[in-house]
Image (cartoon, rainbow over all chains, first blue to last red; front, side):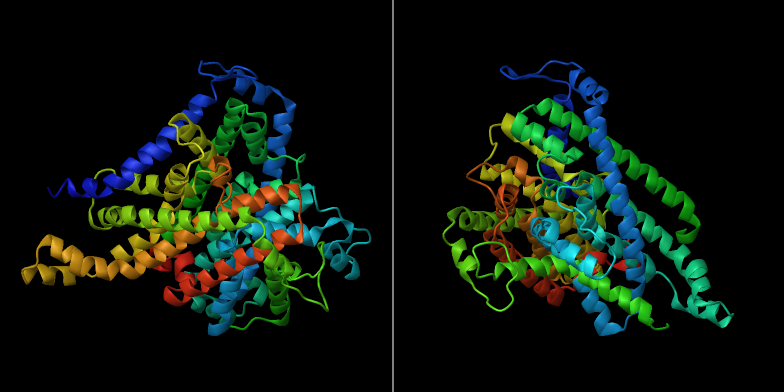
Length: 284
Length: 268
């Protein structure tokens, strides 16, 4: 009785996940090996046609290249701006700290569609508000095209992913003992030295784990690239969507999706291992 | 701890503007009196909010999302409770693997889940149905429900239960009268967080929703793909209002920082 109890308690969840997660994922992997034709539909045979098509056609390489390039830029942007902001938040006094944390993390819960719509309105062609603001600030002389470009996708995705980075760095900074900073100052370290030698090394695990989350979410994001990129500028997820719901070539779409999953799983596992090995002594 | 300098505060101000700008712009444009997209300055109007009523697809999609979110979150919490008790109280073979499996929807890209659900539901004959949507949403909101039920199960003081047993309560009575009442606040927050996530989910749902079962975010997404007009901004403004209301309620009841960051130091 006692030994069976945890299994009995987990049974409903196990059944659900076995049936509705593991079986469908297995079916999707199987789908990548099926044949497809305009008139015959999906033919459940075992062939490598879809894999060959995706791996040999330069178009798919271009789409995957764009997907990961955008994800890397988004990760860099969120790290460069999100990490300092988390540090600034951490140094704020009580009511403001909670208030601004709410303001910055809150967008996480607001519909991605609504947030992306906001960027589409801000970008809005050559007369968009962002370009007007940048030009009046003297930062640019001619409007930058944001809509239907990779630049626009990067900016909008950086906004969507920013809370994850702030969250990760914030969590790391919570473990930081303020007395260490004070000790460094007392020993004569300048503010730059304190940041570089004390704060940054301790925030680094947070930045890295935030980067892993942001990278994998940005590379698999769908609604934002679909709205900002329009119908022609494709990333992996919008390409898979097209194959599924417009071309109806499900096996090809499944192949694109499974490759995306495999690449992201590899990146996440390698990065986690790196972070653990590198920082084992910090948390050990 | 030293204070933030002027440079830090300027950076902070720009950062907050960046985070809020797209959200505020949607709400701003929603109040335009014009028939096209514009930023109203001197005249405001609710005409585009009234206009939503004339588009039954948005209204029915709203009810669809509300029902879907409520039902799938409730079932997810109901399944999470026994699972959380098992994970929190027992050390058993496969415990780590179970936890990883139940959290896996956070690790698998939603686009892949959407495709997998579409293939599976079509094969078993529930493609595009509400049943399919509920099953899929239970799975994707499960990690959120489980995280909060787990937190309250771990935080439970077992001494109270032991006291009840020593006073002669049966196992069932302890569960009903002691354990469940103590975890209810965690369950309610878990339900709310799951609901918000279900209510906003678009990537996975766009694959499995049929013409008659499209949720509000799916309708908005498909609408925006064709054209962007003030109508979709007023619909978005309503969605933002609902989410912000839910968020403030959650913050009062549970604390948003605790909800999102977890329990911090002793979290793992």
